[in-house]
Image 1: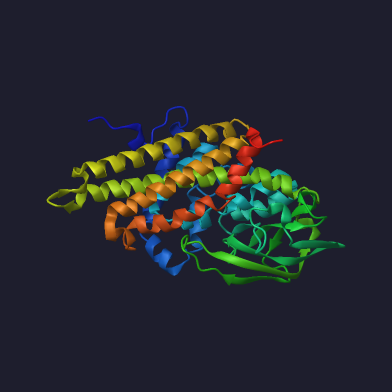
Image 2: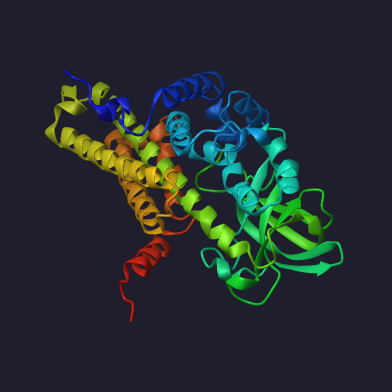
Amino acid sequence: MTTSRFETGEMPGYFDESHDLLRAAARAFLAREIAPHVDAWEDAEEFPRALYRKAAEAGLLGLGYPESLGGAGGDVFHGIAVTEELMRCGSIGLLAGLFSLNIALPPIVALGTEEQKRRFLPPVLAGEKIAALAVTEPNAGSDVANIQTRARREGDWYIVNGAKTFITSGCRADLITTVVRTGPEGSDGISLLVIEKECPGFSVAKKMKKMGWNASDTAELVFQDCRVPAANLIGAEGAGFEGLMVNFQHERLALAVLAHAAAHVAYEKALEYANTRRAFGRPLVGFQVTRHKLADMATRVAAARAFNYDVAAKVQAGEYPVTEVSMAKNFACEVCDRVAYDAVQLHGGYGCAREYMVERLYRDTRILSIGGGTTEVMNEIICKFLGIGAT
């Protein structure tokens, strides 16, 4: 019997030898540094800070960033290869926390001065500091233009007042790329400030308890007359919204990739269980209904992965495929939800037991269609760019 490209992950035209070598490095890192400990980290709801440094030393943390700033270089598909390999640990929360720099640093790269890049990026890319992005507020999530955290300029300082919530890595972050309002209501009044944990008036209000993503810390943050150096303004005042929208496209593609990678792991675990679990005198895979369910799961995963690769290739080519990114995120997240559900169903009662990976995947995948812009917001973006409902 021949081995399909679905099983091997081979996708000609997207990956070359450099990607294969990186996959091997990521696989070794997973086996050595993550797999033996991930269950304990899930229970502890935290992984060691030392993992950032180890990931940096392995060449995994700084992918996509210039080597001149301490990055590892590479293209979009190098990042995809690493995500697909590390996702085999079954903890989306771990990956979200370990790579929170990938939503925190891009606005600095895009809008920051050379001095800001050299000050903020190298220690994060070396795994010495943790970076987070703070957008969501108690009363403003997907509605970014309605952000109310305010920053008032006073000489060489900004005085920041407000709160942020659902901030990945927020409890331990050393620097936080923060969306603030420096001007009037609406998107034109939005700016970006890097707020460091030492800034007076900054505090972590609490570490949030969540349904999933347990290995990543998620924080509520408070800024009370927080004094931030004016030198930490990224770009010009009022330029934050545009910079954030570009950042969102990369975040949404990353979430779509996480979704297809997690779905693939859920499928593999379901297939493994169906081949070993016996019922009524034969393996589960001996029943047509089981085989057909697995075939449907594999088909959905393959379709989501192919769509994501196509969109990633456009991004790699320098295009700005807003519609396709939104479509890919929605489709991959829908696939992931369905495949994780079916994986639990195939496991029966064991699918609800924590010692089986599908239980964690079922919980962890639910946030993917919410984070980075909800399914409903993605659909509105798609309608806008396709002219649906336009008058």
